[in-house]
Length: 336
Image (cartoon, rainbow, N blue to C red):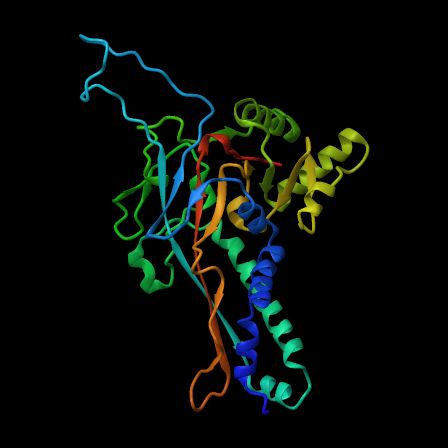
């Protein structure tokens, strides 16, 4: 039987192969895996949006004034219990040059080895690309024409003490994280600490971690820039006489990482992290994908009758969901 591109397409449809591809994407981006493994409870059963039940450690009581023991509908306070988030669509292309496929047909690779190599390249590329998605700003659906279809919030918007966002289409329409105004729910904001240059970096970190831990439990990830990461390692080395142990971060798959008070401390090269430290709690923040479009790979097909290269696309419908903004924090204006 002649070896054709259909052989490859039939192979990559096997469940073990598709599951393996999805796992590879997460393994190649530990930050993506960290958000995926968060414990936030979300409804992703379908529909046009994602629902998340917001979580707080204690209820707040109110006193009513006026006649009667039972408040009327007009003076009964409303409580926000659900946050709603939009889906974003992600598409990546995988091209097999025809000259390379000829080598497969001639036996230079087995189709299994070639599939493994091709999917590995695709998984690495998608994993690297997705790290940038965590720091992009929410955009309007009208910006699809410019290739943005980015209707999820970046970390800098999810972890914030303001909700003054504007629609990219008109720069006027307000957008609220999870459709909740901070003025309606004061708890719906993160802890934002201003870096105190009179104190060492470790003291600033300690204050932020202690504040968050007291309220919600210890953060389980500290994310910052490479410059701040290296300054922390140097400071910790001078204080302790040995470099901070990095087993916690590296056990999560990060090639480079340290630890602060048992919390993995890692960095990203994205410029959005310059002068900023994020303190994350994965119990309340999560990367979710639509069950029907979870890094779904199409068959490879020839691009045209004159260009014999083969092209496949990988589609993902995803969102960044947060159920407790108050459990997250960031330190701004960090100077090292």
